[in-house]
Length: 426
Ligand code: LLP
Image 1 (cartoon, rainbow, N blue to C red):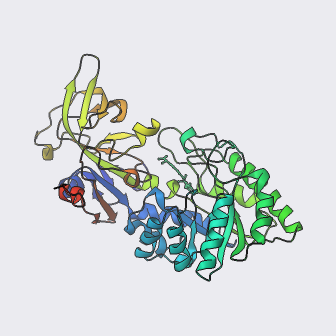
Image 2 (image 1 turned 60 degrees about the vertical axis):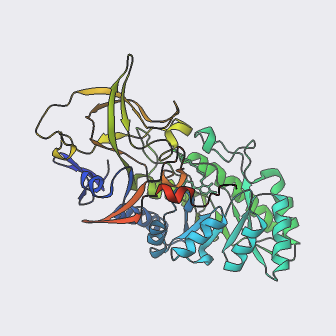
C-alpha cells in the first residue's frame, strides 16, 4: 500500500476510484495504474538531480504502454530502449529521438538504420562486432553514430541471478579490461562519434553500494581515456533501483541520487540514468477475480482469472507480490449480498493455466469467496510488458486512473486478434 493505493473504509482505492468499480466496469484481469504515482516518481528523480546536467531515460521495457510513455515524455523524460519496436512506441507516444539511448546486445542492422534515421542520442554498444557493424551501417547512410560503450564493471549487484547483469559471466557489455582498447579502436572509426560511457549492473537492487562500486570503476576508466585524449560528454549509470514488494528496504530515490551525486562530485559530464521498475512498479496493480475456491487434501486453492501469462514474475523468478482483497467485507457486487462472514484461510493463489508453475502467490492468508476481486500489488513493472498469450488467453485490459477518472489505455485483446495473422495450409 502507498499514498496512491489506500483503503477508504472497506474498499481499496486507487487515487479516488474504487478498484472494485474498475473491475466491474472494465472486467478482469485488468492492470490499473495511478497517474499521480507515475508523476510523483518522476518528479522525485527530477528533484533529486536538480542542479546537475542530467537526463532521466525511462527504461521502456518495464512498461511500454504508450499512455505511460506519453506521461513521462510530457514530464521531460528521455527513454532507454532495447529494440526498434520500443523506439517506434516512444515516437508514437510523443517522445523525441534525441533523448533516446539504445541498449541491448543484439541490435540488428535494421534497428541500427531505424535509430540512425530517427536521430537518437546514443547507442550503448555492447561488443566489438556491434561496433564494426554500427560503423558500417552509419557509413552506408552517410551518418555519424553517437556511441558509448556499455562497460561491464564486474560488480555483484546482489540481486536475483536472472536480473543481475554486471558480472563477468553475464552476456552484457564489454569486459572492463578490454574497454580502454575498444574505445581507442572506436575513436579511429570514421562513422562513429564517442560521446559517453554506460553501465547497468542489474535490477531490483536494494543497496546503494553496488551502484557506487560500479560508478567508481567507470570513472577510473573515464579518467584514463581523458588522459589519452578521449574526452566523454556523458556518463550513463543505468537503472536498477529496487522497490518494496514485501519487506525489502531499498534506498529512496533521493538517497540513491545522493549516493550517485556523491560519487560524481567535482565532475562535469552529463549524468544519464535509466530507471524502469522504480518509476512504475508500485504505480500499478493487477486486478483479478476469484473463479473458484477449491479445498484440496493438503492445500486450499483460490483459482483466479489472471495467470502466469498475465504476470510472469512469480513463475519466472519466484517473485513475491502482495495479494489483497479489494473489499474487506463481502460485497453485494460479488453476488453473495449481506454481511456473511468469510472464513480466512491460507490459500495458494493460482491461475487457470495448465502448468504447476502457474501461481501468483503461495500460502497467502485471505478471507475470500468466489466472485471476489483481488489486487496483485506492485505489478506496474514487468507485468503487462512481459505478458503473453499462452493458452490462447487474450491479454488484459489496462486502465490509468487520474483523480476520479478511469481511462482505458489498452483494450482487452480478443481471441480473433490472436489468430488473425495465422494461415491454414490448403
Ligand atoms: N537499463 C538497462 C540496460 C536494462 O537492462 C534495464 C533492465 C534497465 C535499464 C531498467 O532496470 P530497472 O530500473 O527496471 O531495474 N523482468 C525482470 C527485470 C529485468 C530487468 C532487465 N533490465 C523483473 O521482472 O524483475
